[in-house]
Image (cartoon, rainbow, N blue to C red; front, side):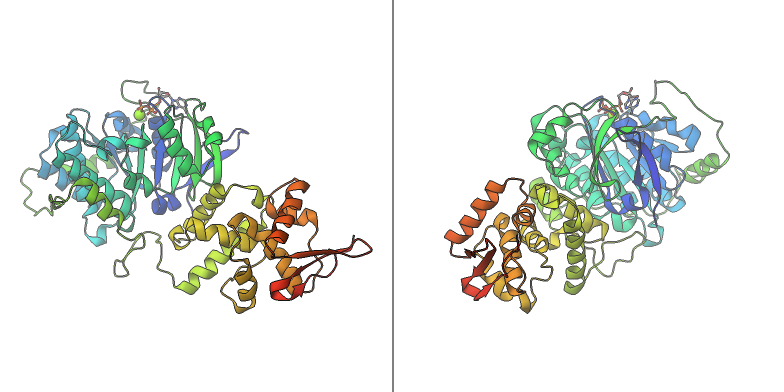
Length: 491
Ligand SMILES: Nc1ncnc2c1ncn2[C@@H]1O[C@H](COP(=O)(O)OP(=O)(O)OP(=O)(O)O)[C@@H](O)[C@H]1O
Ligand SMILES: [Mg+2]
C-alpha cells in the first residue's frame, strides 16, 4: 500500500513524491534558515494530504489557520482555553479524527510550550481504540524541544521536551506521525531529530547546522556545501518515504497563503466542519469526563539524564502493544540475516557501488533497512563496512562453514582492503582463474591501475598471497596459509 503526494519537481522537472503511508511509519525532519521555505513546504504537504489523513498542526506563528476554509481544519486558539479544556479538546480531536490547527501566536513562549505539551500529551494518551493515523506537524520545533535551557522555566521545558520526545519516539505505535521543522538543527534536541528517517534540508548558512544536515543525508562535508546555495523553496530530500538517494526538489505551489499574505483560493466552507466544530466545543465548560493528565517527568532527573533515558527506549515496540500503523516488527535473528543479506545483494548489484563513500553506503543501507521495517541498529557502521566488502566479493553468509577459513586468514585486513583479497581467495578455492586487474580495480573502487598494483604488493608483503607469472605471461595467485592457488589468468 502506498499513498504518494506530489511535493514538487526535481531539476529535470520530474515529480517528487512523498509516500504518506510510509511517512506515518518513518517521520520527517525539515531544516532550513528563516525564509528558506519550510512553512511553505509544510503547507504543501498538508494541502496535498488533507484528503487522505487526519492532520494536527502545532502552529506557533498562527500561520496555518488559513487551512481552515478550503480544507475544513478546525482552528483551536491556544490562548482561549484553560489547560483542562485544551487537554479535553485534544481527547475529542482523537476521538472524532478532526483535523486541527493549534494556533499559539497569542501566547508568550513559556505558555506556548506548556500549551503544546498539554495538547500533545493528551493526543498521545488517547485510548487504544482511538489510535487512528494522523500527521502531527510541529513548525519551529526547536522552540518546543530545545537543546539548551533558555529564558523559560525548567518545568515548562521539561514538559514540552517530554511531549515532543514522546511524539517522535513513541508516537508511531499510537498512529501519530511527527513532522518537525526547524531553523536550527543544532538547537533541536538530538533525540527528537534522530527519530526521523526522512529529511528535507533547505538553505542552511551556519557550519554547525550544515554539518549535522550533511551527516543526516550521508553526505561528505565538501558535497554538503551545496546546502548553502539552495534557493528559497529548494530542498534536498532523503528517506524511505521520499527517495533512497538524496534528491533535489523544488517545492510546488500552495493553495492557501500564510495569514496576512494573499488569500488566493478560498472556496466556501462545507457543512461538515461546523458539525465537527460543534462536536469539539459543545458543553466544553461543563464537561466532567475525567482527564488523564500526563504526569510530568520526575523532577529529580535533569533534562540531559531524562533525554538519555528516553533515548534508551528500544526502537522496536513491545510485543503486547497492539498497533494500527505499519510497524517495525520484532524479527528473529534468522529473519534479520535473510533481510540484511537481501539488502546487501541489492546494493552490490548496483553499478559503481564500490565507488561510493562508506558514509553514503551506510546511509543507503539504513534507509533500505527502514523500508524493510528493520532498524539499521541490527548492523552498525563497522559491521556494515565488513559485510559490504564481503558481499562485494560474493560472500553473503559469513557465518557459513564454507567461508570460515578464508575469513580467518582475511581477518587482519582493514575494511577497505578486504574485498579484493576475498575475491582472489574465492577464485583460489574454486580453482577459478585469478581475477584480472579491471575486476580488482572495480571491486577496490578505483580507476587507477597503479593503486591496484600497490594493493597487490601490499598483500604480498603481508604474506597473504604469492603472485606467480608463468612463461606465457599468465598470472596466478596462491594463498600459502590456505594451501590454495587460483588457475592462471588467460591473457
Ligand atoms: N516553493 C516556494 N514557491 C514559492 N514561494 C515560496 C516557496 N517557498 C517559500 N516561498 C515564499 O518565501 C517566503 C518564505 O517562506 P517560508 O515562510 O516558508 O519560510 P520559512 O523557512 O518557514 O521561514 P521562517 O523560519 O522564518 O518561518 C514566503 O513568502 C513563501 O511564500
Ligand atoms: Mg516558517
